[in-house]
Figure 1 (cartoon, helix red, strand yellow):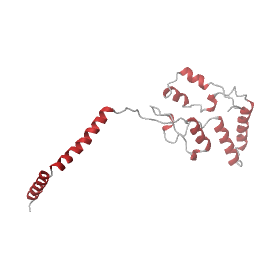
Figure 2 (cartoon, one colour):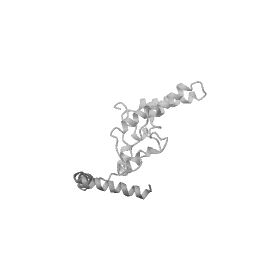
Figure 3 (cartoon, helix red, strand yellow):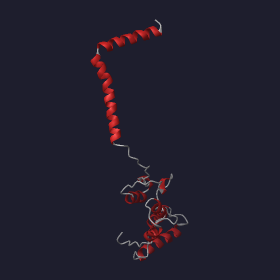
Figure 4 (cartoon, one colour):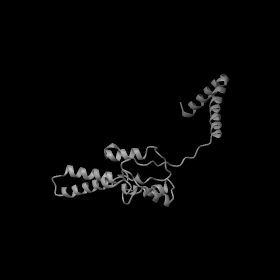
Length: 183
């Protein structure tokens, strides 16, 4: 049989079946329309909510080291969402804690203990002792929050852009004294 003959016979059979089953035809047409109108009414009742893109602060994984991992957990405990990219979103950046006093103390001690047979061990001992003297001699009032961050840190940019703090408030925050005995 030709294609058009088969198609004509199939349509004739379908039309005959539908004409005999009028209630079933009404259900088959009305049910999709009913569901479609429900969807339209829900969409008109609750318009879509516009949400800006969300950037989260970076958090180090445990494989990055214990100190960056704990600092990432503590500093980002409330898991904020920012409208603009955060400073640590570039690949390979763990945070701006790498040159803090505690991080430098750990890295110096690690270098001293792991590579003590090399010629630089005397310099490393002097660095560790200098850092320990600074920590021991300070009453906590001469250490500022700025001392715990990298020199070219991104924390102040973060406060300016994402937290929308004025420059004077950011400088006042960075010049705040830190009492190590309370920490």
